[in-house]
Length: 89
Length: 299
Image (cartoon, rainbow over all chains, first blue to last red; front, side, top):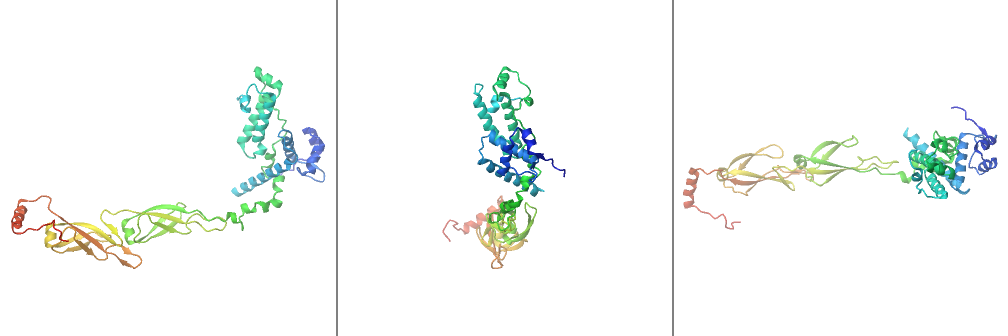
């Protein structure tokens, strides 16, 4: 298993054109859990999740109350997919 | 892109920019791959929709497109997507998905394990088969082995006296149950092949036996078939069409009483197919001194 690349919050803000304050808000609301909590560094999953959150809010008009609901449902779907995949083996 | 972006978004050529944006939003919401994880058709449609929006989403791009000059879709992407979709990061089992195991196990255990969960305690399905049974087997009873759909072999005890339309039932030979529930049953719908010779009435069998004029008047011995081996039937002298002779214990087996019914032989007197002059003369002489009325109510 290759070591995952971690990014600092400033780097992500720069690449995405997203304010660091927004990223911090996502973390505080526990919509994203950084790969490394102490150093507050994020991996590819966090970035993709953040990207999705921004898309939900900007493009689809999802409000802050609904974001965690949607994420929670998606998490369950992915979990079920994985379980089914494992059962097929 | 081969398709007309107006068509893809479902808007008319005279739609306002707002209408185009709303149409795009509605379709993007529906087909976004993260909102349809694992659905490749949705992802394909999402890309189409995004490309279409790229072509006519802004007034400048739309003008260009309407004039017939537009760049390749790749260069027109409005999606400032950086990196993979979220669902792609979870496909190998991502951190977020795996963290579900902490308490997720409790939530989904009932679905996947069925331990003590009533919902998955399902009795197996019943299976239905049809079986054709020989007349002899139906009359005397038999043991036959049949092979089920799932490869299992079933030893079928055919009870004597079974009739078409009856069902034989084998508990537990059907689909296995889920979660420790019992297996389903196998039902075999029986069809008895009719015999060209015998008819069944309860435990007795009946057959019709043609006899000659000589045999009927003088008596005789005739070999007749039975469900098992042929037997010699004694025909007493002076029988008539309709006379019923009984052959003991050549009928159907009676399962309950461990006895066997009888074979009833119903006689039918048959004249020779052509009457020769000698017979004619003999009868003419005989009838001059003998007459009888077959139509009187003798019974």
